[in-house]
Amino acid sequence: MDNQTTLTEFILLGFNVSQNYKNLIFVIFLITYVITVTGNILIFGLVCSSNSLHTPMYVLLCNLSLSEIFFTTTTAPNMMHLVLNDIIKMSLAGCLIQFYLFASLATTDCLLLAVMSYDRYLAICNSLRYNSLIDISLCIKMAIWCWAAGFGFMFTLVVRVGNLRFCDPKYIDHFMCDFSPIITLSCSDTSTVQIQSFILTVIVVLLPFMIIIVSYMFILGTIFSISSVIRRQKVFSTCSSHLMVVSMYYGTLLAIYLVPSKGQSTNVNKILSLLYTVVTPLFNPIIYGLRSKEIQQTLIITLSKCYSLFYKRSLK
Image 1: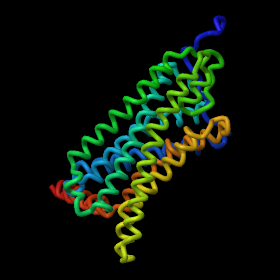
Image 2 (image 1 turned 90 degrees about the vertical axis):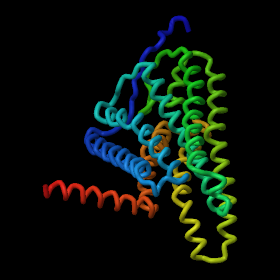
Image 3 (image 1 turned 90 degrees about the horizontal axis):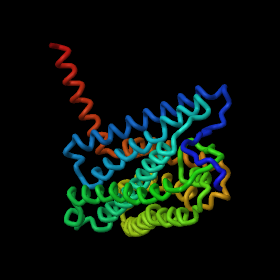
Image 4 (image 1 turned 60 degrees about the vertical axis):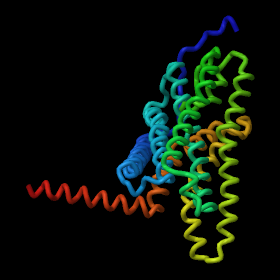
Protein backbone atom coordinates (compact mmCIF):
# COMPACT_ATOMS: atom_id res chain seq x y z
CA MET A 1 0.00 0.00 0.00
CA ASP A 2 2.74 2.47 0.94
CA ASN A 3 4.58 1.85 -2.35
CA GLN A 4 1.50 2.65 -4.47
CA THR A 5 1.14 6.08 -6.05
CA THR A 6 -1.88 8.08 -4.93
CA LEU A 7 -3.88 9.17 -7.97
CA THR A 8 -4.92 12.76 -8.55
CA GLU A 9 -6.48 12.21 -11.98
CA PHE A 10 -8.35 9.51 -13.89
CA ILE A 11 -8.54 8.52 -17.54
CA LEU A 12 -12.01 7.79 -18.91
CA LEU A 13 -11.94 5.20 -21.69
CA GLY A 14 -15.47 5.91 -22.92
CA PHE A 15 -16.71 3.90 -25.89
CA ASN A 16 -14.85 1.31 -27.92
CA VAL A 17 -16.07 2.69 -31.24
CA SER A 18 -14.72 2.03 -34.70
CA GLN A 19 -13.17 5.05 -36.41
CA ASN A 20 -15.74 4.75 -39.23
CA TYR A 21 -18.66 5.33 -36.85
CA LYS A 22 -17.24 8.05 -34.62
CA ASN A 23 -18.61 11.01 -36.55
CA LEU A 24 -22.04 9.37 -36.90
CA ILE A 25 -22.29 8.59 -33.18
CA PHE A 26 -21.08 12.10 -32.32
CA VAL A 27 -23.80 13.62 -34.52
CA ILE A 28 -26.44 11.35 -32.94
CA PHE A 29 -25.35 12.38 -29.44
CA LEU A 30 -25.24 16.05 -30.43
CA ILE A 31 -28.73 16.01 -31.98
CA THR A 32 -30.10 14.12 -28.98
CA TYR A 33 -28.54 16.61 -26.58
CA VAL A 34 -29.85 19.64 -28.49
CA ILE A 35 -33.38 18.18 -28.71
CA THR A 36 -33.33 17.23 -25.03
CA VAL A 37 -32.21 20.65 -23.82
CA THR A 38 -34.45 22.56 -26.26
CA GLY A 39 -37.52 20.45 -25.44
CA ASN A 40 -37.08 20.76 -21.69
CA ILE A 41 -36.36 24.50 -21.94
CA LEU A 42 -39.53 24.84 -24.01
CA ILE A 43 -41.63 23.08 -21.36
CA PHE A 44 -39.99 25.09 -18.59
CA GLY A 45 -40.59 28.37 -20.44
CA LEU A 46 -44.21 27.57 -21.34
CA VAL A 47 -45.11 26.61 -17.77
CA CYS A 48 -43.43 29.69 -16.29
CA SER A 49 -44.95 32.13 -18.79
CA SER A 50 -48.51 30.79 -19.04
CA ASN A 51 -51.00 31.38 -16.24
CA SER A 52 -53.14 28.50 -17.50
CA LEU A 53 -50.32 26.07 -16.68
CA HIS A 54 -49.82 27.34 -13.14
CA THR A 55 -51.24 24.16 -11.61
CA PRO A 56 -49.59 21.69 -9.23
CA MET A 57 -48.98 19.09 -11.94
CA TYR A 58 -47.25 21.52 -14.30
CA VAL A 59 -45.24 23.20 -11.53
CA LEU A 60 -43.77 19.78 -10.73
CA LEU A 61 -43.24 19.08 -14.45
CA CYS A 62 -41.45 22.42 -14.75
CA ASN A 63 -39.05 21.38 -11.98
CA LEU A 64 -38.53 17.98 -13.60
CA SER A 65 -37.65 19.64 -16.93
CA LEU A 66 -35.19 21.99 -15.21
CA SER A 67 -33.56 19.03 -13.46
CA GLU A 68 -33.30 17.13 -16.76
CA ILE A 69 -31.56 20.07 -18.45
CA PHE A 70 -28.84 20.11 -15.81
CA PHE A 71 -28.75 16.31 -15.58
CA THR A 72 -28.03 15.68 -19.25
CA THR A 73 -25.56 18.60 -19.39
CA THR A 74 -23.37 17.00 -16.70
CA THR A 75 -22.69 13.97 -18.91
CA ALA A 76 -23.47 14.71 -22.60
CA PRO A 77 -20.55 17.09 -23.39
CA ASN A 78 -18.05 14.60 -21.92
CA MET A 79 -19.64 11.78 -23.89
CA MET A 80 -19.31 13.65 -27.17
CA HIS A 81 -15.71 14.58 -26.35
CA LEU A 82 -14.95 10.92 -25.60
CA VAL A 83 -16.40 9.72 -28.89
CA LEU A 84 -14.05 11.97 -30.86
CA ASN A 85 -10.95 11.63 -28.68
CA ASP A 86 -11.20 8.01 -27.38
CA ILE A 87 -9.99 8.98 -23.90
CA ILE A 88 -10.10 12.06 -21.70
CA LYS A 89 -8.31 12.94 -18.48
CA MET A 90 -10.24 14.16 -15.47
CA SER A 91 -8.83 15.31 -12.16
CA LEU A 92 -10.03 13.59 -9.01
CA ALA A 93 -11.87 16.77 -8.01
CA GLY A 94 -13.48 17.08 -11.47
CA CYS A 95 -14.55 13.45 -11.37
CA LEU A 96 -16.10 13.81 -7.93
CA ILE A 97 -17.90 17.01 -8.97
CA GLN A 98 -19.40 15.28 -12.02
CA PHE A 99 -20.49 12.32 -9.89
CA TYR A 100 -21.98 14.63 -7.27
CA LEU A 101 -23.94 16.71 -9.80
CA PHE A 102 -25.43 13.89 -11.83
CA ALA A 103 -26.13 11.71 -8.74
CA SER A 104 -27.83 14.65 -6.98
CA LEU A 105 -29.91 15.49 -10.04
CA ALA A 106 -30.85 11.82 -10.53
CA THR A 107 -31.98 11.72 -6.90
CA THR A 108 -33.96 14.92 -7.40
CA ASP A 109 -35.66 13.32 -10.43
CA CYS A 110 -36.62 10.27 -8.35
CA LEU A 111 -38.14 12.42 -5.63
CA LEU A 112 -39.96 14.66 -8.10
CA LEU A 113 -41.45 11.64 -9.88
CA ALA A 114 -42.67 10.32 -6.51
CA VAL A 115 -44.28 13.68 -5.68
CA MET A 116 -45.87 13.78 -9.15
CA SER A 117 -47.38 10.33 -8.57
CA TYR A 118 -48.80 11.55 -5.25
CA ASP A 119 -50.28 14.56 -7.06
CA ARG A 120 -51.94 12.22 -9.61
CA TYR A 121 -53.25 10.06 -6.75
CA LEU A 122 -54.90 13.08 -5.14
CA ALA A 123 -56.29 14.31 -8.48
CA ILE A 124 -57.88 10.96 -9.38
CA CYS A 125 -58.69 9.30 -6.05
CA ASN A 126 -59.65 12.47 -4.16
CA SER A 127 -60.82 14.65 -7.02
CA LEU A 128 -63.48 16.49 -5.00
CA ARG A 129 -60.99 17.50 -2.30
CA TYR A 130 -58.01 17.94 -4.64
CA ASN A 131 -57.90 21.75 -4.56
CA SER A 132 -58.09 21.81 -0.77
CA LEU A 133 -55.41 19.13 -0.33
CA ILE A 134 -52.74 20.51 -2.66
CA ASP A 135 -52.03 23.90 -4.23
CA ILE A 136 -49.23 25.79 -5.98
CA SER A 137 -47.64 26.90 -2.72
CA LEU A 138 -47.45 23.34 -1.36
CA CYS A 139 -46.07 22.06 -4.68
CA ILE A 140 -43.33 24.66 -4.69
CA LYS A 141 -42.38 23.70 -1.13
CA MET A 142 -42.31 19.99 -2.05
CA ALA A 143 -40.20 20.73 -5.13
CA ILE A 144 -37.72 22.73 -3.01
CA TRP A 145 -37.49 19.81 -0.58
CA CYS A 146 -36.82 17.44 -3.50
CA TRP A 147 -33.92 19.61 -4.70
CA ALA A 148 -32.53 20.08 -1.18
CA ALA A 149 -32.80 16.37 -0.33
CA GLY A 150 -31.23 15.32 -3.63
CA PHE A 151 -28.14 17.48 -3.19
CA GLY A 152 -27.98 16.94 0.58
CA PHE A 153 -28.08 13.13 0.49
CA MET A 154 -25.41 12.87 -2.20
CA PHE A 155 -23.09 15.40 -0.54
CA THR A 156 -22.50 13.05 2.40
CA LEU A 157 -21.61 10.19 0.03
CA VAL A 158 -19.27 12.28 -2.14
CA VAL A 159 -17.41 13.53 0.95
CA ARG A 160 -16.82 9.92 2.02
CA VAL A 161 -15.65 8.92 -1.48
CA GLY A 162 -13.35 11.96 -1.63
CA ASN A 163 -11.63 10.85 1.56
CA LEU A 164 -10.64 7.51 0.02
CA ARG A 165 -7.17 6.86 -1.37
CA PHE A 166 -6.97 5.98 -5.08
CA CYS A 167 -4.13 3.99 -6.64
CA ASP A 168 -3.16 2.57 -10.02
CA PRO A 169 -4.63 1.60 -12.41
CA LYS A 170 -6.16 5.00 -13.16
CA TYR A 171 -8.42 3.94 -16.05
CA ILE A 172 -12.20 4.19 -15.74
CA ASP A 173 -13.90 2.02 -18.36
CA HIS A 174 -16.94 4.24 -18.59
CA PHE A 175 -18.09 7.50 -20.18
CA MET A 176 -18.68 9.23 -16.85
CA CYS A 177 -17.51 9.17 -13.24
CA ASP A 178 -20.13 6.92 -11.69
CA PHE A 179 -19.90 5.43 -8.20
CA SER A 180 -18.94 1.85 -9.09
CA PRO A 181 -16.15 2.72 -11.59
CA ILE A 182 -14.64 5.20 -9.10
CA ILE A 183 -14.84 2.94 -6.07
CA THR A 184 -13.08 0.05 -7.83
CA LEU A 185 -9.93 2.18 -8.18
CA SER A 186 -9.66 2.82 -4.45
CA CYS A 187 -6.91 1.11 -2.45
CA SER A 188 -8.65 2.02 0.82
CA ASP A 189 -11.24 -0.04 2.66
CA THR A 190 -14.47 0.79 0.79
CA SER A 191 -16.88 -1.47 2.70
CA THR A 192 -18.34 1.39 4.79
CA VAL A 193 -18.76 3.62 1.75
CA GLN A 194 -20.44 0.84 -0.21
CA ILE A 195 -22.86 0.16 2.65
CA GLN A 196 -23.66 3.88 2.84
CA SER A 197 -24.18 3.96 -0.93
CA PHE A 198 -26.56 0.99 -0.78
CA ILE A 199 -28.57 2.55 2.06
CA LEU A 200 -28.82 5.86 0.19
CA THR A 201 -29.86 4.01 -2.98
CA VAL A 202 -32.66 2.29 -1.08
CA ILE A 203 -33.79 5.62 0.41
CA VAL A 204 -33.65 7.78 -2.75
CA VAL A 205 -34.50 5.17 -5.39
CA LEU A 206 -36.44 2.28 -3.85
CA LEU A 207 -38.61 4.21 -1.37
CA PRO A 208 -39.82 6.78 -3.98
CA PHE A 209 -40.43 3.86 -6.33
CA MET A 210 -42.58 2.16 -3.67
CA ILE A 211 -44.52 5.41 -3.21
CA ILE A 212 -45.15 5.48 -6.95
CA ILE A 213 -46.24 1.81 -6.98
CA VAL A 214 -48.68 2.30 -4.07
CA SER A 215 -50.05 5.52 -5.61
CA TYR A 216 -50.73 3.80 -8.92
CA MET A 217 -52.33 0.79 -7.21
CA PHE A 218 -54.90 3.18 -5.74
CA ILE A 219 -55.16 5.06 -9.06
CA LEU A 220 -55.77 1.89 -11.07
CA GLY A 221 -58.31 0.72 -8.49
CA THR A 222 -60.19 4.00 -8.89
CA ILE A 223 -59.99 3.87 -12.69
CA PHE A 224 -61.33 0.29 -12.89
CA SER A 225 -64.23 1.24 -10.64
CA ILE A 226 -65.44 3.82 -13.18
CA SER A 227 -68.32 2.36 -15.15
CA SER A 228 -68.02 4.59 -18.23
CA VAL A 229 -65.33 3.35 -20.66
CA ILE A 230 -64.86 6.82 -22.18
CA ARG A 231 -64.45 8.45 -18.77
CA ARG A 232 -62.12 5.63 -17.68
CA GLN A 233 -59.87 6.27 -20.70
CA LYS A 234 -59.93 10.00 -20.11
CA VAL A 235 -58.90 9.62 -16.46
CA PHE A 236 -56.14 7.14 -17.32
CA SER A 237 -54.74 9.49 -19.99
CA THR A 238 -54.06 12.11 -17.31
CA CYS A 239 -51.47 9.87 -15.64
CA SER A 240 -50.26 7.66 -18.51
CA SER A 241 -47.47 10.07 -19.51
CA HIS A 242 -46.06 10.08 -15.99
CA LEU A 243 -46.31 6.29 -15.83
CA MET A 244 -44.34 5.91 -19.08
CA VAL A 245 -41.53 8.15 -17.83
CA VAL A 246 -41.40 6.35 -14.48
CA SER A 247 -41.20 2.93 -16.18
CA MET A 248 -38.24 3.95 -18.37
CA TYR A 249 -36.38 5.85 -15.67
CA TYR A 250 -36.73 3.42 -12.79
CA GLY A 251 -36.22 0.34 -14.95
CA THR A 252 -32.65 1.36 -15.77
CA LEU A 253 -31.86 2.81 -12.32
CA LEU A 254 -32.91 -0.36 -10.52
CA ALA A 255 -30.96 -2.51 -12.97
CA ILE A 256 -27.76 -0.48 -12.43
CA TYR A 257 -27.79 0.35 -8.74
CA LEU A 258 -29.73 -2.45 -7.04
CA VAL A 259 -28.69 -5.44 -9.17
CA PRO A 260 -25.21 -6.69 -8.16
CA SER A 261 -22.59 -5.19 -10.51
CA LYS A 262 -20.73 -8.51 -10.69
CA GLY A 263 -23.55 -9.87 -12.80
CA GLN A 264 -23.24 -7.10 -15.38
CA SER A 265 -20.60 -6.64 -18.05
CA THR A 266 -19.06 -3.20 -18.55
CA ASN A 267 -20.85 -2.78 -21.91
CA VAL A 268 -24.23 -3.65 -20.39
CA ASN A 269 -23.62 -1.10 -17.63
CA LYS A 270 -22.74 1.55 -20.23
CA ILE A 271 -25.88 0.82 -22.25
CA LEU A 272 -28.11 1.03 -19.18
CA SER A 273 -26.38 4.26 -18.14
CA LEU A 274 -26.99 5.68 -21.62
CA LEU A 275 -30.70 4.90 -21.28
CA TYR A 276 -31.22 6.98 -18.15
CA THR A 277 -28.68 9.73 -18.93
CA VAL A 278 -29.62 10.26 -22.59
CA VAL A 279 -32.84 8.49 -23.63
CA THR A 280 -35.10 9.30 -20.66
CA PRO A 281 -34.32 13.05 -20.61
CA LEU A 282 -35.00 13.05 -24.37
CA PHE A 283 -38.37 11.32 -24.02
CA ASN A 284 -39.61 13.50 -21.17
CA PRO A 285 -40.44 16.59 -23.29
CA ILE A 286 -41.62 14.39 -26.17
CA ILE A 287 -44.02 12.34 -24.02
CA TYR A 288 -45.34 15.25 -21.97
CA GLY A 289 -45.39 17.66 -24.91
CA LEU A 290 -47.15 15.40 -27.39
CA ARG A 291 -49.64 13.93 -24.91
CA SER A 292 -50.57 17.11 -23.03
CA LYS A 293 -53.31 19.10 -24.74
CA GLU A 294 -52.70 22.03 -22.36
CA ILE A 295 -49.04 22.30 -23.39
CA GLN A 296 -49.95 21.90 -27.06
CA GLN A 297 -52.54 24.69 -26.83
CA THR A 298 -50.17 26.95 -24.91
CA LEU A 299 -47.43 26.34 -27.47
CA ILE A 300 -49.79 27.19 -30.35
CA ILE A 301 -50.93 30.39 -28.62
CA THR A 302 -47.33 31.40 -27.84
CA LEU A 303 -46.19 30.75 -31.43
CA SER A 304 -49.16 32.74 -32.75
CA LYS A 305 -48.26 35.69 -30.52
CA CYS A 306 -44.62 35.52 -31.57
CA TYR A 307 -45.63 35.38 -35.24
CA SER A 308 -48.01 38.33 -34.87
CA LEU A 309 -45.35 40.35 -33.09
CA PHE A 310 -42.74 39.53 -35.74
CA TYR A 311 -45.21 40.26 -38.54
CA LYS A 312 -46.11 43.68 -37.11
CA ARG A 313 -42.47 44.62 -36.70
CA SER A 314 -41.67 43.54 -40.27
CA LEU A 315 -44.44 45.81 -41.57
CA LYS A 316 -42.89 48.77 -39.78
